[in-house]
View 1: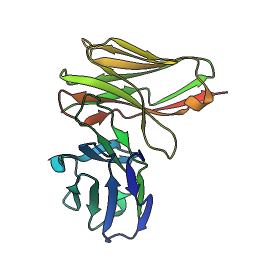
View 2: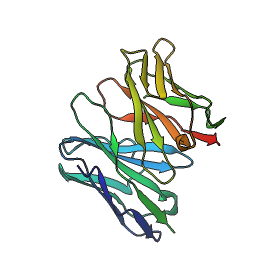
View 3: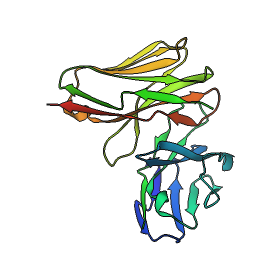
View 4: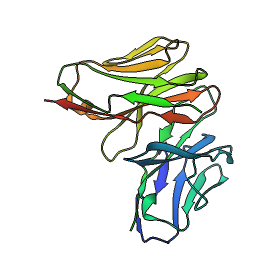
Length: 114
Length: 112
């Protein structure tokens, strides 16, 4: 298996622009998580899905952030409009509802908003 | 919600020595405690985990201990090597939920 796939790996954009991050979970995994990592706040859970349905979005910082999962193999995290404080590494992770609880992380997207 | 505290934030050891990182959690319903290693510029990767029905688990040079009564768990790395240098995160999952709450991380440096 290719593991969790994220794109792009790096994104540089100007303040006010829309940014879309993409994630493909491991095939067969029915949980998908979006995390944000910064030096100041560490690893934060933004939102997670189960069977394509958002379960908990309490970590989404504000209305500028939105996430969708239109099918079992694809999810997006959108920021509109972007701000410099959104600069961070965004990780997607997936896991299965079976016995194992390990979450498998993607390589991350490093977002820089200037 | 769950709160996980991790200490120390930085740790330097000589190669061959042992390293210990400690975490405490707040929710007594938490029942799964993984440890992730993150090398610079890379993704977090699971190195060991423990469930609440077990007090200790070992995997070669790595071990994790859990004290449910005190609500704390620790990572032990023996015979440290330079390649052990990384940031280590503890985490906890509450009950049947799937969301991880992470500690703040420990930067481990193994000095040659």
